[in-house]
Structure formats: C-alpha cells, structure tokens
Image (cartoon, rainbow, N blue to C red):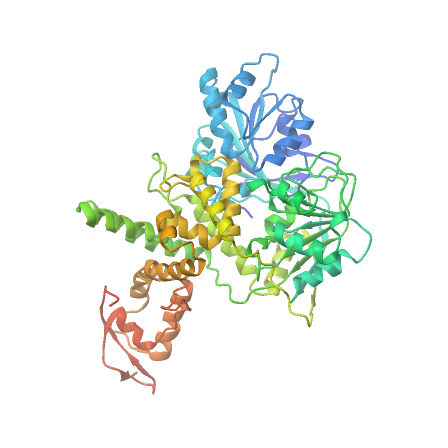
Length: 614
C-alpha cells in the first residue's frame, strides 16, 4: 500500500501468538513507516505501556473515540481533544508523579500540546517520541479536515518519530529520505486471510435486507450514511433492535433519539451489541470495538446514491474487519457499481496539476505588474484554477502545493476506479492479500429507490446558513476550526451541497438577492462551473494537437470529448458538453476542411494556436 517505494525495505516476521511488544520490547523503532499488516497486534500498547516504551510519547490518533477508549485502559494517559485546555496539558507535563508522559491527541488539538510545552519549558522535539497512528487517515481525510496535516509541519523536527498503520498511506515527502527513513513491513508467518463474500447487485437495499435476515447472528453493518441506515432500519422494521454509531455533529445523536433511534457517538469498552449495529466511517479504523460479541460483518456501498459509502478494500475493509477484539463471524460486502465514473490515474492527476501550476505561476508573475481592478481580476482567475484548492493558505507555506491533498485526490480517484465495474473490485480484494474472496451477483426486478434527504425547508436553509456564517465567515481560513466544527461543516456539506457551495462561492448577499432559491443556485453554479474551468483545457488541447499534422474529424471529436469529459464541461443548459470537429477551431486557426492524404477521411490541420474561446 505504501507509496514511498524508494525507502529501504525491512521485513520483520511475526508469529500468530506474538504482538508488536514482542518484536520491539523497548518501544517502536524511530524514523520508520511501519506497515504492521494486521490490526489488533498491540502497536499503540507497545508505545503507551511503560513496561515497553520507557520514554515520553505523543500519539496522534485520527478520531476522538480512539482517545476515549485508550483513556479507560491507561489512567496515566492524557487525552487531548476539544474541551481540554492548554493549561490542562501544561499541568500534566509538570506533574512529577508521572515519570513517562503519554499524550494521545487528535491532529486538530496537537497545537494545544505544542503551546503547553512552550509554557512549561519542555522541548517536545528532543524529549518526546512522536507517533502518527493510522497514518492513512491524514491522506484520506485531508480534503475535509485541513488541520489533520498540522502535526506534519513539526514531524521531521522530532528526533524520534514514526508512522504506523496496518494500511499505511503517505505522500512522497523529502523528509523521509533526508532523515533516512525505512519502510518496515511486518510479515505474518501464518495464514491470516479471512473469507469474504463480495455480492454485486442492482438493488443494494433489498440485498441488505436479505443479508441481515439470513440468520440470528448479530450484525455489525458498516455504512457511511446515517440516513441510509435509518432507511434500512425502517424497511426491516428493526428499530427496537438497532443502534447507529456516528459522530455528533449538529447534535445528530439527540436528533436520532428524538426520532426514536438508538444512537451514540462512542463505543464503551465491554458494550453489548444490539442485534443490528450500524457504524459510520468514524469507526472504520483505530477504535477498539471491545465487546464479547462476535458479529457478522456487513459492509455496504451504494455508489449510485451515496458516493461517500465507497469502501476501499486496501484500507477500509482491512481496518473494519479488525475492529472487534473478540473476533467476528462472516464478512460480506454488498455493492453496486457506476459505469460512468471517470477517475484519473496518478500520472494524469499529477500531469494536470503541473500544467495548472504552470498557468497559476504565469498569472502570479503577470499580477505583479498590475494594480487595482486588473490585479483583483487576476486573483479571482487564479483562485478558480483547480490547483488553487490544493495550495497551502498559511503564511509559512503559502502558495506551496499541499502534498496530502494531492495524495488525497489520487487515492480518491483510485477507489472510484474500483467501482466502475465489479470485476475491478473483485480483483482489488484479491490483491490486498487479506481475503479469500467469493463473488456472486444478485439481480432484482424491483428497481432500487434512491435514499434522498428531505427537501430543505426555508427554515432549515436559514439554520444551515446561520451555522455556515459561524463556521466559515467569508475569508476565514478553515484551519482555525476545531475538529468538532470541521465535522459539523462536513455534515452540512453532505446535507445541503448546493447551498453550501453557493454560500462559499457567492456569499450571503447573493443568496438573499435570489431569495434562497435552490433551483437558481444550481443553475448559476453550473454556469459558473463552465466559465471557471473552460479555459483550463486550452493548455492540454494545445499540447495534445500538433500544429501541421492532419487530423480526421472522428479523431478530433474523440480527443476533444475525452478532455471535455475529464473536466466535466457543460453547455449553457448544464448538460455535458458534446464535442464537434469544428470546435477545434476554438483553439487553433484551422486549414479548410480537407481529405486526409492516403485516406478517404475528412479532417483539418491545426495551423496556429488561438488563446481566445470567442
């Protein structure tokens, strides 16, 4: 899984009855990206337990539930999250009764630890070992949790540090090679593969209902959509025997309780499962689901109606199936597919970004020669180039590409590519090395009903906009939000995507001007989308077609259409833009229509580049 293939690879064997503390009795190794291959091998225990790691440690965990579960097991541990102050951390650091300080913290709260250390006169970089656990989350969630990358600004400043996961992902950073990092791969000496049933279907809901009723075993259903979970619960009439585990953004748990659902944002050690337990992505990794139950695992993906339910076999599935410490029963993944997904390869994404960065820098140079309105207009153009979304905003790194966001885009596209057809997903499961896969297809005559949120009332629009203004005033940099606020913002974007996009793009005054009309918002967003990105393909089109070479009309249409589709260009009616051979004249001065030499095909020769689309 790891992308840093230029690092020195060290293979370390582990037996069935061994844990990480057996391999590293003095604590985890430093300057390493540790691919532990398996979950539940006591990696964090190896660092938190003073019997092994006799040193001060900071462990970055992706989510709050992980901290809650670890604090129960280790009373001398300090969990730092929202609600814990700089003073609390300082007091802990100065507590002489605790010999080895063990701090476990979310990425967003790391700054509290750093500030408290300065107040207490503690040198974190020399006195503490830094461990980033479940490091793939930094990549997978960088797009909606900007502050998740904050610890990496200091990561290479620590004398002793490491990344660890059973499914590691990380971007290529110079620090890994500059600090002589190694890639440690833990190799089990025993057969650790689990049997998994992959079920493709044209009706995910009906297949889910069928699977949960197959036997009396308890079911743990991993589905990244509380709304979808509610739909399944109601259709199966199992409300009294179900519980939804999700984050509590926007007071979601109380709302679920008010609607008559059992729900929680945490999992208590020793908790007895309901017959049907639904878990969102908050619980996919890191969290120990410590229960005596051994449930059947059902993973659910409905990429046609809920794109966020796509499960990555290489990361999500491996992590999910390792959550229950007492063991599990059967494993099933129910999914459909989406043929019109158009994911890009790693090479295409990087090539596109390099071209965009070139244009962005050219505009930056030109902007320096301008003043007033002209300078402002160029700034607006720069901010509309897609690469602007992956640039750092903070002063120290302003204008530089955020490698975590780049890797996030690459990984997201990689997962999407698996859901274009079921064979690709089946192949991916086999490639993980973690599963013995059996695959079959279930067809239903009944068409699936999309799980849709209720239409937004005017009152709900006003509530959402009020929260948006609190969370994201125009011009506010997102990194200043707490982890809970960022989760709430993500929830609002899921609930009302057009409203949030429109607010963030045009502002509140424009929303009032159009009287909160969603139809107008959608139409103007589509129009703006066309205007914003139409100029982006010019660079690619100019590089694709060679001046002086004849092209047949069919070749022109096919090539232009591929580019239009990749950039999701739309016409004035918001429909996908359909290429015509004559459209090449928008980008080049063309020869007259001609017969291509040695063929009977009609076509054109590009003679000179054009830089205006008019």
